[in-house]
Structure formats: structure tokens, C-alpha cells
Image (cartoon, rainbow over all chains, first blue to last red; front, side):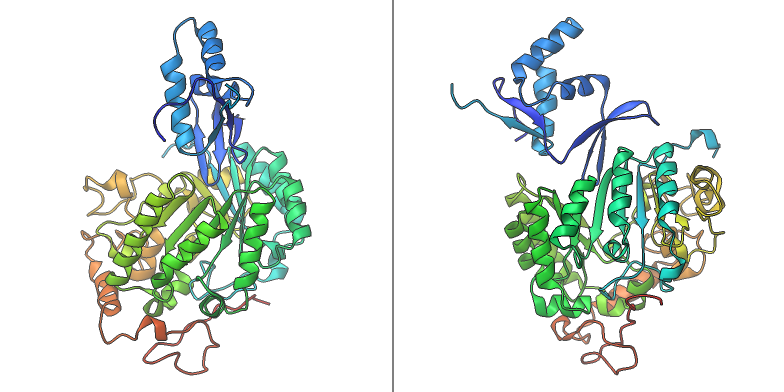
Length: 96
Length: 384
């Protein structure tokens, strides 16, 4: 499961995972059962776009515009790690 | 350590009450349970949660005893949730009726951990001291039905560790998202009952083999957390990830501790009725006593592992040697390691009774429990 994620898939946070701003430490965090994951700004940006409607390709495009550079490997690798932990669920298009 | 460098805690374990319908012989509560009449009031817990959030707490774990025995549980969960905390209920599941569960769901509860004592009612109920197995299974199904992530908590010991495969069968059948297989840690009640609880090496090796296979087979569905029995380790556990580093515990009467066994230690109490949580965390003797590595004696002080295991567990050092500043006796480098070796030798003595012959809690003074077994110290359901 630590491989790649499909560019057509639409990622969203698993229902039991929450993302919030940690004011005391000035950073975004992911909260799940018995776990706190601290996010760097790029990770937080990626997850902020994982709303279940955007595809991975859409997210790559959007971040490419924001950062003015190619980010596709960064995005897919980051998401693949979270998919492996079941913190991100990816809905795949089946109508294609 | 200068106060300004101390980061806030990530998690708060709120032990709302010591009252419990179960009477497990390895209970982590103090030997001297807090009376219900001495428990913090709802308003106190509100304030504590507010102060905890300000301090940086991101997760609150509502535990006990049995937290469902607190009538204000739903309200407290709701308050923690409104502060943005990830809320976790640690329960025997006795009292988790459908309406109560629904109310907790509506209050924002994020995660439920249900304790399981064994794989079937006879042993489970004997270990819990009350008819409870079927209710637990039913409640675990309800947790999944209501859409919560489900963790099953299993304390492993001599009397149930041979059933780990069947216990994991329940984990699979119930669709648990996580399982915590925690070998008993020997403090308080568990230390008093150690000879009846400490498994043999053969039992452990078998359980670890079964657990590894299960983890591999269900790696896409279930997180398997296996807490090792430190008596069989060469080095001690880095208790709580460091003293006063990530977690704090608040007991029913408002005493704050760096871990849930620290009530045993001869340190001045720090109570939320008397002090702000910020001061307790950053400056109280209770929380600063063993923070960092400056307090360490030899062999820890000069050891290359001092930042790895942090001197081990202060409570274990105190309980076994009477000196809370000594190296954890579990460490093979500790001059007190013989205390552990003797207990392990007894647990592996062929003359020790077959674990299957042993039974769970019975009232103290009612006579020997099983062939050749010591009497168990029985945790009462409540203090008053």
C-alpha cells in the first residue's frame, strides 16, 4: 500500500481523522486515535485540498500554481504514506 | 531545566472516577482508591479542560475506573470537543447503552476503547469479577454501528495470554480499527498479584508469534499495538516518552501526575484545586523532579542509552527498591536486576501451577485460589 496513488482518485481525510491548527505550537496537526501527526506547511496545504471532490491531479495542479514548481511526486508520496496508515481514503472514479 | 523550554503536554488522561463495575486484579488504579465524595465537581473539570487546552493539550482521554459512572461524562466530552480536542473514551463498556452512546456521539466523542479480558465469557467474567463479556461484545458492535473507530484494549497476563489467537479472532470479527495488546505492567494491584499474572517465557513467545502473524495478515485493516512485558526485556521502557514531556494524568480528586502510577511516589502532591495547571506542568516538584536527564544516577548518567530509555520507570524503581531515583531494575545494567530475575525465574518454574487452573478475583481471606496459588488482592468496586 505504500506505492503510488492514482491521479484520478479523489482523496479525503478518513472520517475519524481531524485536522486542526495547534495554536500553542503554531502549526497544523492531524489528530487520530492515540496519535498526533505534526504537519509541515506543504503537508498542511495538500491535506487542505483533500476534500473528496478534487482529484489528485487537481491537487497537483493547484499546488503547482501556488508554488510555481512541479510538485506531483511530493503530493503522491505524501498521500501514499497516509493511505497506508488509513488516514486518507481515496475514492476512485469508476465511470472511466 | 529552564521553564521556558518546556513544551506543553499533547495528551490529558482524565481519570474521572475510581468506581468501576469490574474488579480486575491488574487494575492500574491506586491501591487506595479515591472516594466518590472526594471527586472533582463538573465545574472543576470544565476549568481543568480549559487550562489544558491553553497549555497545548490536543487529546483528552476519559478514563477511570469506569468513566460512564460519571453523570456528567457527556457534558465533559462535549466541553473537550468544543475546545478542539480529540476525545477518547476508555471504558469497560458496562453502561454504554444505546441512548448513552448516541448522546456521546452527539457531544462529539471521537474514539472509543473497549476493554476485553478474554475470548469467552467464563474466563472473561472470572477475570473481570462480574458477568460482562457478552455486554462488552454487544457494546463493541454498537461503537462500530455508530461510526466510531473502535479500539479493543486487552491486558495480557498469565491467565489469558494463551488465548490471544481467539482474542484476535474477536478483533477481526468486530472489525476493530486498533487493538492494544498490553502485557501487564507491575504496579499497584498488578504488583500485589504479580505471581499470578506474570507469564512464562514460553507463553510470551507463543503470543508474540500469533500476534506477528495477525498483524501481517490484517495490516490493511487493523493497527496492532503490542506492549512488551518489560520484565523480559534487557532495557527499561522510556516511560511516558519522558517524565512530564508529553502526557499528564489527573486523578478523580484532582491530583496531577506525569503518569498513572506516579501516585506511589513520595513527591509533593500537585492538585488542580490548589494550583493552575500551567504551574503544575511547568514548575511543580511533581513534574520537574525527573524531567530531562540531569537527575540521573549511575549507571544511567554515563550510559549511551540515557536519551533512549530515559532511565526507565521511576515508579518501578521506587516500588521495587524503595528509591525512586535509582535506575529501573529492569535494566540489565542495574545493580537491582536480580529483583526482576527472581520474579521471572519463579514464573518459569515448572512447579508453578498450570495457568489454566488459576482463577480470577475472589474475596481476600476466602482461602487459597487454585492449586498452589497465592491469594489475589482484590480491587474493590469503589472506595465508599
